[in-house]
Image 1: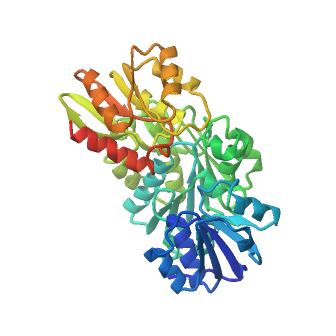
Image 2: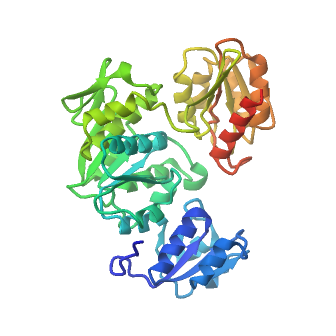
Image 3: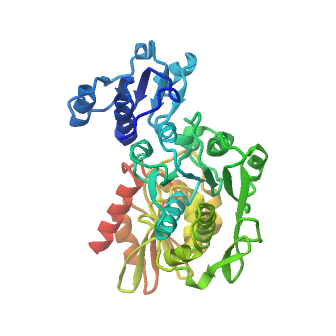
Length: 449
């Protein structure tokens, strides 16, 4: 297992704020690298096996509160990405000019092979997975990590220089980088999201754009040429620009009404692609560009796209019950993701939506809702989404307590060939620990019908 290069990472006393998967993995890496580690987690059980293991390695662990004196003599903070910058420890670290990183910075220090970073408001998981599958089908050594589930620095500890590592990156993670530099940076789209964390759109978009801040001329920036919000960041890019577009031919990947291409190469016809939805065509083009830049053959890309039908919780087909079709799109945590999901269907849709209230309104959902048959809402944003549904003229709007009740309510009003779609347009944290938990509850409720 690799350790940090102490010349590249010169800190001797590191403060880890928040454990969970990323904090635990970062702590083990730091301790194994001979670095003194102080850990602070508000809710962790100090007697848990995980903390006992860290203590045995020499970590100083403090739980239950955030004593500011713990920052005395600390040189750098590695924080869990989800912890807001309003946390008292983080605010004090800022006051003391202590650098604040996330564990992806450590992953970048460890991995010396081809590093592909994927970010954007929507489509990250699908695109990251596609790139991984393209390279795997090409028999190229490749690993997958990041916001998709595997902690980046943990995966990077066992990669070789011959391996590519494909990393899904959130805005939370990208706010905490210093030298982290993907060889291929992919920016899918920019939308209004996570305003409770970033406070305004400019901060959020700026965090996403951090993915290219350390790139040089021999790196690549794969970007969505159809998204006007991305254009202002192009002038800051020192890397080689590789656009993708569904509207026009580019010097990267593109599509017309018949096929997808990379530059002048025809990859395959659109009719052979299994993955549904126009938004997924954009994800495919981004993944094709990253894979081609990594040396993948067209045959490998085609072999994947003729069988790949999506990832769990992202437009996932669940089952058919009495000719009613159930889809799980629990990963749709913002308005654009839900809009894209609705556009993927021609038949009547009963939408299940709601979740964490981040302070935004849902006016941008009004037009897409005009096409649906029914709306079932739940969670903190239930009333806001119902109001959007009323403005859209949705004839059937029902309030329920949770996803399980939503399935029952939707099934009761569904007819033959209708689609029941969970696509919440909100994060899950008001009622569920993760969007995965929400999606699993939905699928369980569907199978109980």
